[in-house]
Image 1 (cartoon, rainbow, N blue to C red):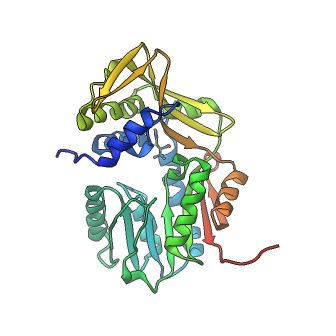
Image 2 (cartoon, rainbow, N blue to C red):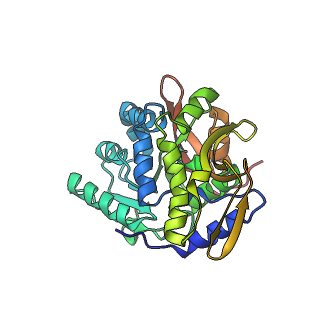
Length: 316
Ligand code: AVJ
């Protein structure tokens, strides 16, 4: 199927490439091909987050279910092709499941899968960008809510935006709601780089697909061979950064707009923030969520945190 061209893609690419530090928002990496490649990434030996989080969910599910609340509606932010959802649905038996995703295709697929596997759980899919306004289905108005935000997707956002997003989730779900969120932990830089620059080159292909997408959807003439994938650890900002670096002087045009890149110049395409235990909890607190419980794997590679939306109150 042909990808429909989102006008916001053009706007973001043209504006981002014109910035003093050229960058393109990471969400544009995830077109159909990009999402397939990301699925491949999650199966790589060197990419530990998905398998670690899934095993953690499996191992701790009884405990999580006991604390996360009974008779709730589960609202998943960015449900994508998540394989973690069934674990949660199986253990919690929620009164409703509300997957929210920007991709209608993915949403219909996953809603249909959940429908088939859990015929007694009503599914109310919402096609929306969860960073923008989201209207929850009226059917869950009277139910307590549990938000589910796995995969360390929060790591894609710089702390300031991550805080905004957590506050936004609180507004969507309401005071007293709970949130189960996955966050990747800080770890030795060799392991981080191996996870984002795999020897098979899948992550490189995932990153370079953005240039293919620009050529395909925006009629660009980017010489893709003039760019290479680069993953680096920015210690001060606590994040892995992905870049597309020009290996020689190169130029291209998109929509009649001309861009020149000197050898060594880069396009910043994604951030993946890593948090220590304190940093993770501070981020949640700053976003209006009080941490209630936390689970990690034995190696401490990945954390699942359960938090509760803070009430509005005066505090000393
Ligand atoms: C989907 C944002 C969680 O940061 O680990 C993986 C994206 N990019 N490899 C991550 C990603 C390259 C991934 N998240």
